[in-house]
Image (cartoon, rainbow, N blue to C red; front, top):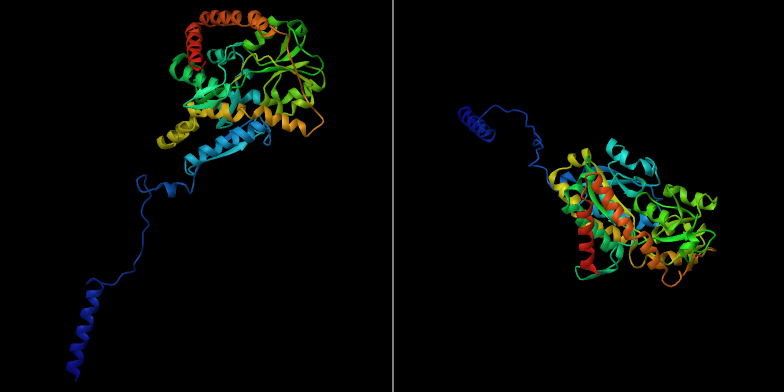
Length: 378
């Protein structure tokens, strides 16, 4: 009996050694795989997105923010499938609008939207789009009807993409795209403007560059005032009028301080979305591609349409209709628009070219190419 028990014990021990790999039993531990760039999937990467700050001077509930800035941010985040997260800091909460370029250069913010007019002389060749009476009209792009703002935004971006000297204006920061406004009109708080003579001595808020020269030639006194300060300046009589388009009227409720507006379109404003160069360089190549997929010509057209599309004027007038403030349209006398163009249109083009060439910049080349592109949309 003992013999049989001994044999059985040997068999049991042998089977145990087979099960344990014929080696002494040791504790079993599970080691997590080392994370490498090749082992991280897009789904895993989305757990911790790249976080960027977008500073903006516009109020968070204003039209520019609601219709344009916020949707563009959403477009970036959706294109990245959650790998980029952008936090918006509106209403000059990070810095003043006039400090935007310095804030981008210094890393105070990662992204910002700037009106070029707040930085006179900083983007001289890009100001070709601001020359008086030079823009393209409403037209079509890729088979779809587009507003003048969308068309001129596409033209400006195409120009920057093909002329190296224009690209150099944004050296030290990453230009994502530039765009234009719709043509501006003059709004006034006391005086109706029907003729050039009505402009004499009028204190008109304007952005720097060619538009300022235009008002001087027409007899007005242009004044540079930050957008956020214009409501107060108009209500206190510091300015008599302001070059406006409907997006600004609605965003800043300027219909409360201006009673009249002229039907003559004059100049356009130019804008850019800029990114801190360091923040751009820290993006992986695929995320840089994502960012550019909603920038460039796409971003320019998007900004022109969202900010200054066909429905804009109707929206703002509906907004006014809910208040006690109504801006009255003032029709200029017959032939008045042609007088303004003759007095302050082409002479400023020629002056601008001369100024650019004097600085060693290809002003004539930029102007000629702009006019060539505009002709394609007329």
